[in-house]
Length: 78
Image (cartoon, rainbow, N blue to C red; front, side, top):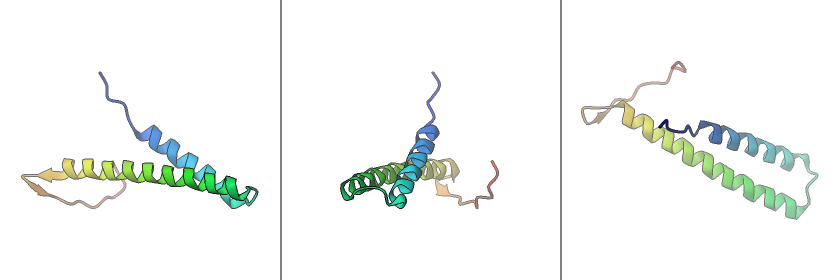
């Protein structure tokens, strides 16, 4: 069975976060709506940070060789 990718959920969270920021920046929300939107944004930010930390840990495991971590610069290519 193939493993599901988490990237679409991460991308969706980023898109949702961008939408929330745009709503907040519009200035059209009431104080209560602004607070609720801000809370949603904080939750999405934490989800994204967790996903990024998980990805970083996976990369470190992949780069580990002979019990030592070999750091390689990211050049943007795959």
